[in-house]
Length: 281
Image 1 (cartoon, rainbow, N blue to C red):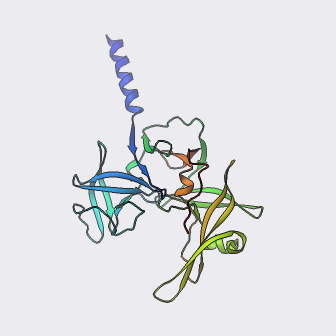
Image 2: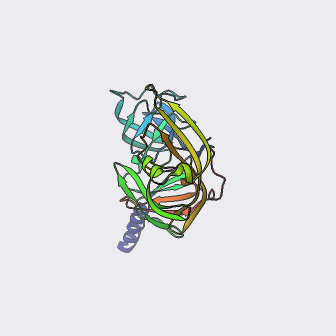
C-alpha cells in the first residue's frame, strides 16, 4: 500500500513539474500575432503580442471597447486578463499606445514570467513550461536582456564585409530588419544596399525624415543564413533610431524557445523560413 501511494505521489509530482500551458494565436498577413483576451471579465480585446514589452496597452485606434480598464494618467494596474480558461492577475495596462493591424492594443511577455516559453509559428500557439522542454533540433543563442527587452547578436554581410551587430527582437513591426542611424551611417547603407522604396515626411518644425527600404544580401544566425532580407533605415535631419530591430518578418521564420532566466534562446526553422519577404513600400 505504501509503495502504491509513493508511486501515485511520484506521478502526480511529475505531472506538476511538467505542467504546460498553451495559448492559441492568429498570425495576420502583416506578420503580427493576435491573441483573443477577456480583460476584467468584461472587455473582449484582440491584443497584438509585442515581445519588446512586458506589460499590456490599449490603442487609441482600437475597434473594441476597453471601458472596464480604469486609467489614471494613462496607467492602470491590477487588471485581469483571461486567455481561454487561464486568468492572469495584476496586469498593468498603458493607454494610448498605437498597435499593429487588426489589434486593439498589445500584450507583452509578462504573462510568461519565471517560465520557459515557446513561440510556435508552425502551430500558431504559445507554449509555456515550468521546466526545460525538449530542445531537439533547436540551436542555442545568447539572449541579452535590457529593461525587459530582448536582444540577440547576428552577423550582417554587406559587400563581402561581415560584422556583428545587436538586434532588438521587435514583433510589432511587420517588416524584416531596421537598422539604427549609427549603423546606417557608419556602413553607408544608402549607397551599398539595393534601394526598393523610400518615403519622406516633415515634422511640425519643418525637419525631414526619410524612410528607405532595401535588400540586405546576407543575414546570419551562426550557421543559419537568410538571403535577400528586407531592411529599412532612416536618413534626413531627424536622427532618432537608436537600435537595430529584428522584426516580425524574420521572427516568423523560426520557432523560438526562451529559457526561464532569459539568458538563452533556442531557435529552429519554421514553415515560413523560405516564404517571400513582406513588402513595406
